Amino acid sequence: MPKSIFILLQYLTPHYLFTQLMGRLAESQRFWLKNFLIKRFIKHYKINLGEAIIETPDVYSSFNQFFIRQLKPNARPICQEEHEIASPVDGIITQLGTIFNNQLLQAKNYYYNLENLLGGNQLLADNFHNGLYATFYLAPHHYHRVHMPLNGTLEQTIYVPGKLFSVNPIMSESIPQLFTRNERLITIFNTHVGKMAVILIGAMIVGNIQTVWLNHPFRGNKIVTLSSNPITLSKGAELGYFKIGSTVILLYEQNKIRWEPSLIAKTNVQLGQCVGILNNT
Image (cartoon, rainbow, N blue to C red; front, side, top):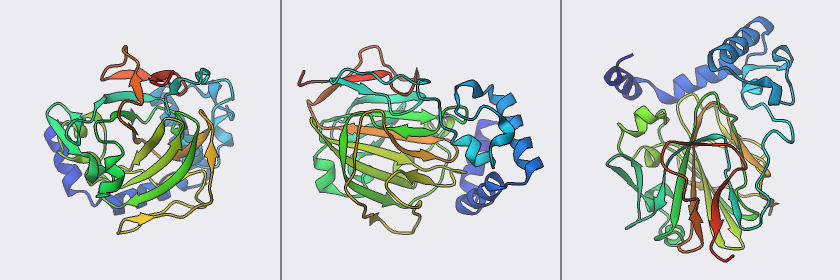
């Protein structure tokens, strides 16, 4: 499909209706349908089920259960040194760097505002002024659970409503302010080097964004701070998951960390590999 047509369809498609319909299809437990979808997906994307806890396609109750499949315990070793920051996902680093003048680079010459990303919360944005950020894109073939980059205690969970544009590289290079337009879930953790934000960006066909501390996914039409019991998660522990692909953005305070020098845009990373170093070590 020509790029211009794909982008036009993104604007014309009713995001939530289409996502809801695709979600119902992905949740179907009809044996023939879910097996057809799973096996076609495995063949098309060359999925290695040998690293999953459930290796047999027919055992999954639905396409969605297959999509959020869990990996075997040793499939993704987590970097062990206390000063190392672990990649939270399997994915592609699309951008990373320093937040200058409260602006983050989306792609090429597209920038977006830190405060807007954080739902217009200036006090929260002030924590990350001149800090560091990294953007991870999860393609359909990637493992879709999100894990902790560092040990941390949950401080806030903020839901921000928005559009559901696709977040693949074509769209991130074509739609200004993409990540501040889309629905997202902002999670703020206290770590021993200050605050850390792990932001899960919604996208078209993403049925929902789920966390391990909320009983059910949330979707609404206004910004909401979601309540939950205090929870502390260790580095590498599961934080949540996407149903279908999306994007994760990490934010850190100024002068608290540095990214691994070898990491550049379009770098492939695996969950658990070292992507940064704490500055207090």
